[in-house]
Length: 167
Length: 271
Image (tube, rainbow over all chains, first blue to last red; front, top):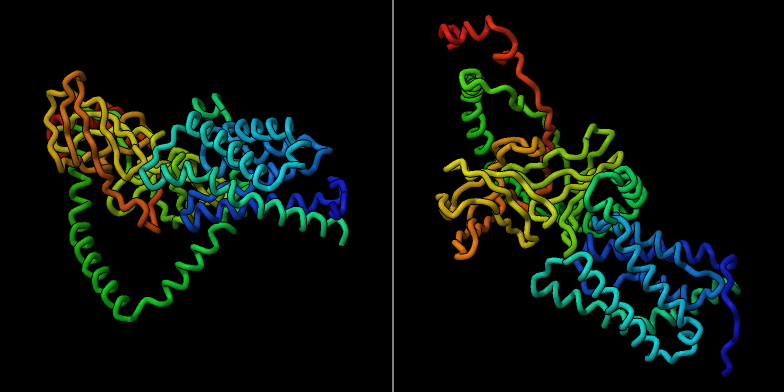
């Protein structure tokens, strides 16, 4: 109850937001290109869901489209396929974002896990990935790992955005 | 999505987007580049001596083989004239490129080369290593090119069995394996047979080794054999590759150049 109440404004954190996306996209590429790690969730998508839930003055649909297009280019998938998945994720987040903000951490983590499961099912249907046993496990581990990481990411991003606004 | 998947209508957009994310990808590969850089520094002098000796031996053998090459080339030209071959691949132009990084994800199997438009690299050029075909260039930026590997599920290569000349289509299956389709049950295919490019479709030049047959099964309810093959190229290990240009030209000494040449060959003067 003693938490400071404030509303995030886009103009106050736009550079933080843009560089955050760039850093997240670089980190995602690094995991795949340098370390061959496939069970880690996309940090860019988690950031997209975070900003969709927190920055309520924007719909973030265009951002989802852009990130999707760049992901398609990086992963050599048909242009617009990841964009479609990300736009659907953002659309579902938009419908619950006000109540999502008030959820406790565990409930938020479960919601994010379910969203990412939905994204993986869509990826499975659209791309028909060819997966040996180890990669099959990694593929379905992604939503679980995102659910575990979400509370830490949420807390970190809130702290950083608070600093970006008031420092 | 449909337009991009079934046609090349958005290839220029894709090239533009690839150019935009190129700096990010270069930044993302810094850890693996740094790892390779430091790993090279720790190679012992003994390793380098052994590598040097092996390369010198290889060089000697290749030079010995090369001595016969001009004679063989003349022989092929003469045979082509006798067989009335209208067009053929002239000596391919070759460029050497370094692989900057691999992307072997469940969705696609690609790698990036350090040469692009500025080095006159174009889409649909073939990439080989010292053992055989590796892939096809699908996207090009000013300074890099994306190569789709032959093991990618979206790629299909017109091939033939070198021993029998039987034609088929090789398709990737992601697990460092290819399946060869449309080869009739009555055909003779043995384990260990070499599969080479057939040259049909004018994308892949004729005669480059693609894979070796690892298993052959005869399904009861299908008219074709089920053939699995392993690529002969060292996919995932190569760091330097060759880019071939596919300029198909009618040779200047072709039969179609004039009747006088034809008469010369008929009279045996061409021999």
